[in-house]
Length: 372
Image (cartoon, rainbow, N blue to C red; front, side, top):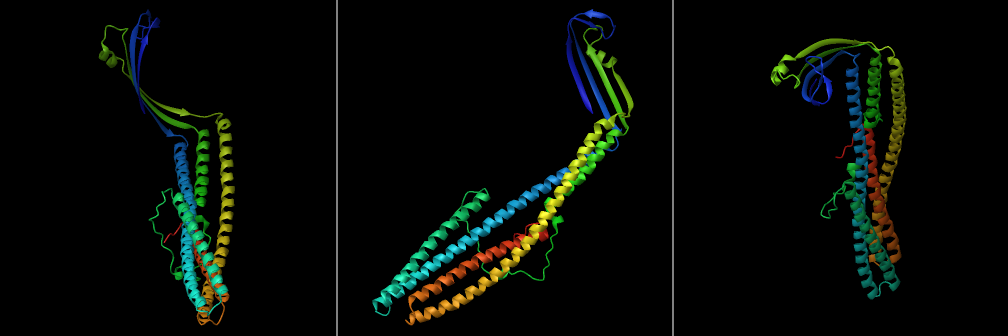
């Protein structure tokens, strides 16, 4: 549907639209038209085009969701890395503080002649190492914080507090839960499926060009020319009104010469998308089983780290009791404390590694991220 208005000026020789005689004069003319074109039957071409574009739009939305998922896992990794770095930093600070307290106690015993000076030097060396580790881990925590804020496209804020995971029970995996790699839930698969269905409708739309089409046309027009001085503007507009109604049938004869290559191209695009879909499903299935194995490994590491901390805590307490009674040398305390510190560090890393693998595995099962 449209409305058209033309305003023109004629110079030189022309034909008078009223007398059909040659005239050689300057005159103005105005032409106005309202028209309507309504397809009645075009082989459902418009319907198939609409369906194809709607499916392409849905495919694009799913691809956007896939990009969001990729960004989400990067944010989760950065967030857990920050929690791990801050917890390790806090651990090393406590270790350095404990070493300093032990150094002060050893110094008193050396001054009292209970322990040799070399025991004090060993504790002092341990204290220096703990301080160095505390400074290093504090710097890593700052870098992890900066990386997270940059990933969130935000300005770093030192006042922002990130809560650590205190209770290991929240990380325990329910063995009764059966995870399945339901890849059809993932947006990458949905996007490819929508696109394949879009190509089906696009193919039908192109094929419809080979069918006869029926259309309805309506036209209403009028004009004014200053070459007719006998009638004024509105009189001419009223006198030259003209309307028409028509029904048109179009039968393509050589339409396949044009539509056939386009149909073949659409089929090729559909097969390429189908191949890509199969490849994506295979990759996601492999990623799921990899995540399943990684989860089992992370679980074993976490449980082993819990056992390590328990054993080394008991050993360190026993060594402290003996060194307080001057039964053993400080070198044995140093070894026990080093093993205890390493066990705590392993526990923190195993805990957050286990949490990450659990999140990934649940994502493959649910098809979306659960950030609770």
